[in-house]
Image (cartoon, helix red, strand yellow):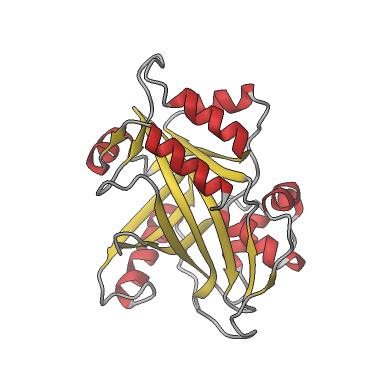
Length: 275
């Protein structure tokens, strides 16, 4: 098994469980500040042990548990314009930037259409709409939802010509305390739908994302003590930079090289096909 996947699984099984309803009540955090870290497995194991220790002041972080499972398979399809407008808005650090995706929870089959924005204060704000079996992520209803979110949040019109751009697959364990959530992703694989090129993240790294209403969680503080600093990395932008570095990776270069030590390579999908 991938060492990072094994590490998040062990950490989740060692923690006390928490049900999804309680997670949503204590730390749903659709509007939050977040930080991303590329954490070596050995440091992640120490981090998880400290956070989930029953003797921890304030109580231990608990692991999300659904139907007895403690870690879960995620599949996301990101949508962008033909000229990759949302990617370049992030690359250039534009103030009004957002990402559009369909997320599939592989273990339950649940699907969500999501729009992630940055607020003027630097918060990540997520808007989401559940998709039923007959719904498509770019159907009329979702286009209307997207238009309403962008107009209401930014005063701009929705982009035209959206199409699938990048697909990601990974496994996640989630740890929760009051007002704090820590997601731990492993086994990340990304695929460019235009070229079919793929890249797999380093199997010795866990992508840790901290989420809170404040600016730092306890996990941030522990990682800082271990000498791990937040990385300029998101799965969409970092993944695209790994499979298509010619697009320009500027401030993401170090994080991309760390996360994807092997350059993007052709997948079994024939060049020029799309998902």
